[in-house]
Length: 499
Image 1 (tube, one colour):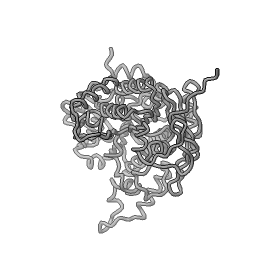
Image 2 (tube, rainbow, N blue to C red; image 1 turned 90 degrees about the vertical axis):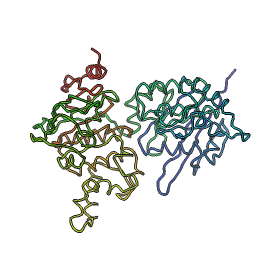
Image 3 (tube, one colour; image 1 turned 45 degrees about the vertical axis):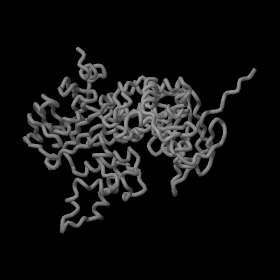
Image 4 (cartoon, rainbow, N blue to C red; image 1 turned 180 degrees about the vertical axis):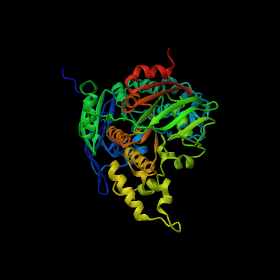
């Protein structure tokens, strides 16, 4: 007797969506099956976010059909999708901080009466959280909870609404390795309970660990779907970017020059101490360590945001005092923040305005009037040099993809003509194609003679891009390795403090 497979819980059939002249989705078809984790990968701008919005009723397709259990449906709103068991959680959880954990979990429910049964609501919330192996008092206010706990609340909210399809958009971007593993356990429980999970991530290691099937999008099109065991990382990357990325971590051997930056016994009470290193012209010094090791604190001290209390800093053999970012810039030190959206960029402003902001005085020589033509010429030069993809230089930076935002922030600091460039997590939250571009830019900058300090939680990136690697643990310097000696095992041993 032939057994007919049940239809997918949610299916997209030849979905197309335009925004003006831009075709965000072009004839996309995708199936989500019950009891399966389906990963979706692709560069920023590939159409993943638009597809999520179609699935959740935020956008309606211009062409094609959405099917639930094999039947065509029209999702007019997020409430329509929610009523059919389709929910989404994002990189930044949508939590009401002034409400309790239990209230956040059940906020989407339509109460039949006017009386809220607080005791029962808390008990039900506790039961759902227990299913996820999350131990949070449901009576606690949601404010102050870590991101991992907030995401658990979002998942609990979806479960309370009888979720059948859970869409997870970059849910691990702000989580530690331990928190990621806990989240994965929660996802596997949902899969085992028959939920269809769509998992979107730039981190291919996570995709291969969690997914049953993997789909690739590029330029608004569905390129391929593979069973996890039938595809390699290299094949996925090639499908995502439309080309082979054989030298993913671009680096060319070159001879470093003289010492540009010399740091000795740098410290700040209770944060870090005893930090000492040199950075040569044309050298990339990698800073490795676990989250909370103090790497960013050292960078903020060198840039004058949170100045060091002890120790010395020399530039080209001359001792300097750095008590503010303005002083750092005057001495030729620039710092690319790990938080581009809140600290690194002014999202409502144009690409041109962002690139010229730290050096605006250069474009206003007389009467405080800005020379717009000079601004545009500089911005156009960086657009070409860094391959910033944008319809125009007047585009608001907030509308760019993550990779192009990162390139704009890099252009902003390169325009200050620094001698030392500190890059803090320069490839976090950007796709593989943009990562390859950033690695190539870093390599070009080093070959041009710039002294670079690179902080990254991606250990293969640190090892591949750096000439030397400094390792930190709990605010202390625990190792400094030449490139030839900087193996993954040695760096991790220094980072975790294992003898």
